[in-house]
Image (spheres, rainbow, N blue to C red):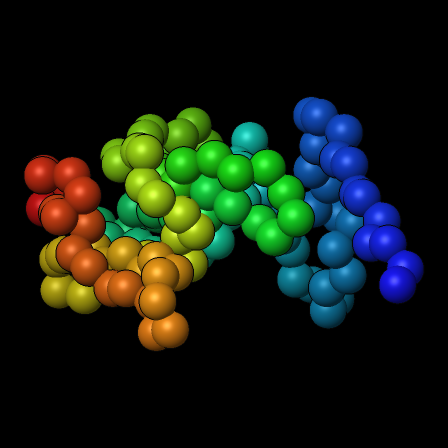
Length: 121
């Protein structure tokens, strides 16, 4: 059986939106950098962007999952940390955030407030 090659990423990772092929007249900007295993994103009622970091990618380093808010200046504000990964999704519906985590055959979906009081506005 052939071994699977290990891919190492150099840090800091170079972020170059111009390297992504897009249709003419379309543009792409990086709104956040420095993320570890970004898995999903959602917006709240004020159009703020939240990113779920998975905490794990197959064959890679394991960390804890977390939810971050992307601020207008592209800085990141941690909202919830220390979540057992892998986090596979975040969604918002009429106020509360919902988190999806892998666990069991169907995974687990729970309100973010179960992980961090005050997360849901």
